[in-house]
Length: 487
Image (cartoon, rainbow, N blue to C red; front, side):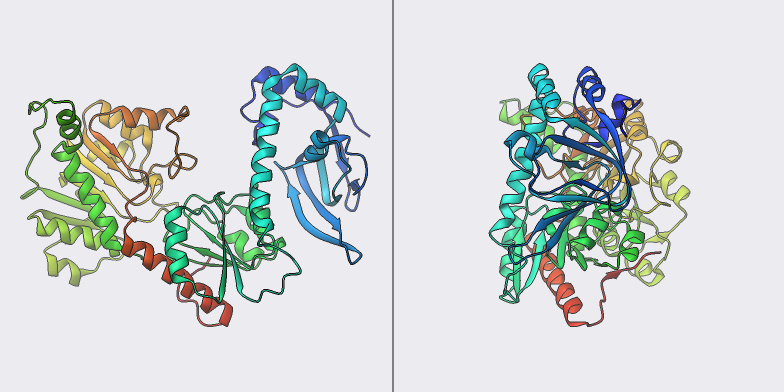
């Protein structure tokens, strides 16, 4: 039983190939779609059937099975809310390549092939979006075919490395030996790309991979048992879901605290002495010194928010520059403070007395937007704010307001709370749609780098070594000293 669904066009925003379509195109598509509901074990479509329908999964779960050459059916994937089914068959005019069966009550939107193709003819944006989506999926799928086979006799530990850049490949290939089979994927790990990890017992993820509950479920169903984070933070992992599905999570708690602290100092010095502006002036033949006046750091007060390994390095650097150093941390180390002449204070006092505030705290529910409008109001006028930790520590809109009214003298940011989709990627030829990021980039007293504070040879080597050791410990059943445990 089906009927035209009384749904608003924004229901299509959950589907990545459709979210950016104009509202008129979304409305036209929805007008041609019908809602279908499937009970557990209902067959949505069968392998070999004519591919005459395209499905969008609104909720529920569908199992995808393919016929094995040696007989029987093999489950290859499961799809959930926000996923598609049948698009390849629609455009390729070929039989269904798999059998789809509901494994829980499932609700879909369906459109017949002819109706969809008619809409594509009428609305070029729809065809472009769907074909672009298919192209990305084909490229990603093709990239793993050479290495991945369910019947492979290769006994090496297979690791799918997501969001892999050239420097990741170089450091991992130098560190991992013949016991491992590394497969590097440019794609970021999320609910739409988790199928690329099918058959890999270990996945290696980075800071902007999204390991939410649907991604965790898809990984578990594909045979993954270990998530090896090659970073310190784990706020991008749904730890409750990991526990539910029996996945172990390990991380790299420290790779080079000196690298991050030194980058924080570089941001501070560049901002204070206007190095970035002076560099651009000189390149244009302008050798004037107007509006390049900075201030001596010696004798000023530095506030270190989060005095862990990186925060200690930064506190030591600031002390070495002759600065008065204040620190705030949930677990004060008085011996360290005495050794460098730092004084632990409450956050409010740190905000009120510091000329420079450098953030080195982890991102947790209690530290999200630690720097907000109220906190900024407590700070000294003209304060310099440095963040090389996590973007979510700062409320971007409050920061922008503080910059606009002059309360904040400058901001050096290596992280941004909505950096996913921008940082680590080349957007030089595309439009940046994040208004807050564009505002921050436009300010002369804001310096933004693309999450590169960790990027030194020593740090990359330490990341690869610790990740390798974490994986070896898991595979051999040894104690996991770097395991992340749910709360």
